[in-house]
Length: 485
Image 1 (cartoon, rainbow, N blue to C red):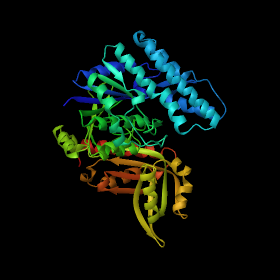
Image 2 (cartoon, one colour; image 1 turned 90 degrees about the horizontal axis):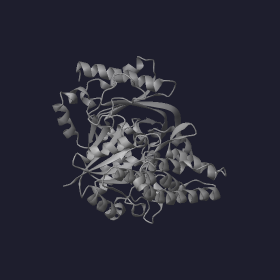
Image 3 (cartoon, helix red, strand yellow; image 1 turned 30 degrees about the vertical axis):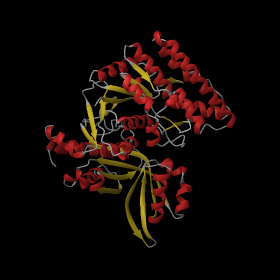
Image 4 (spheres, rainbow, N blue to C red; image 1 turned 180 degrees about the vertical axis):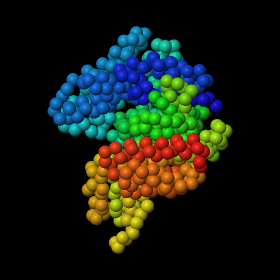
């Protein structure tokens, strides 16, 4: 069976104004040399806009909102970076410019619609983002790769394989419809070394552009892997600045260790609770398809440095046992933290209805059900929401289900992650006492063997969350070095 690697390159991999594109091309050549075809998923580039480095997606959203507010601004930035990159590749310059002009016209029409309707939402927003971002980038990278002697092609937006529902700004992948629309993608893979496709973007069954939520290019990589799984041997490769580290490097600077192996569950939890590994929804979509597709997080600066993510923990455990005892020494894989959380307390029956509404109707999963408690009026369920702003925007929704709901903001959560942490005696008490030693008040601790995580909830005040993460991570290093398990 032919091996196909789905390689995802985010905006940071491409560099500001595409300065790192030559390195991306070289990396793609290295992957090809591993006897694999490649489907390269590209995010929108990052650009220098108004003296600030921003994602092209953020720039387009800002411009679109200006138009909707009857404040039209200069939009040349939405095409200029692509033209500047293309001019360096003369052989395919004219062919690309024709596509760029076509896409730019789509952007102009969409922005005019935003101004007329005074709303930058739904398909107007999705179309603007698609043709100023990922779609244009994927076409451009195809021409760049061709100019470097790579046999490549791009997925035509008119024959797009990622079919979604019509939730335009937070679309949901539709597997059956996408499978029905995948013949163009498969044909391109058959006849090329590399196929370029834009991340983040979907289309409805009637051809309207949609977007996933932010971080959606990871989902495109996962969904593409799902579509190709029956035809090829598939691996997903996320090209990053680093492989996975033992704590969030934005918080912890010292004694970070590389994590060689993660289960799907551990990687999903790490992403959910603050680590920038990959979109947890991408893992869930693979898992829900009953597939075990190997995922590799690759340090693009040193591709020998990787983290392997697989569904089957026993496979990972065996590999770790063979790797000089790593399995027994690193039961706490990751320590991470997340700020701006909220606790929602409501009657348990009402909570069951709102959970169903969030997960099934709204496809929203950024919350955790904590252990319930009882009062005079019955059992109360506590929900930890990882985005306090989401709760603020939807308070009326919660109160419609339970008028007596209690909502507490300004909460932070520190999370220890590891499928086999339960093998480590006193891990929960050690973590909580470590936080207490730093004069941080623990408001709640949630530890269950089945969940592969320990949650320590603290007040989101000052440096509480960061200090707690640093303290537990330091303790983790000492425990591992002493081989206490």
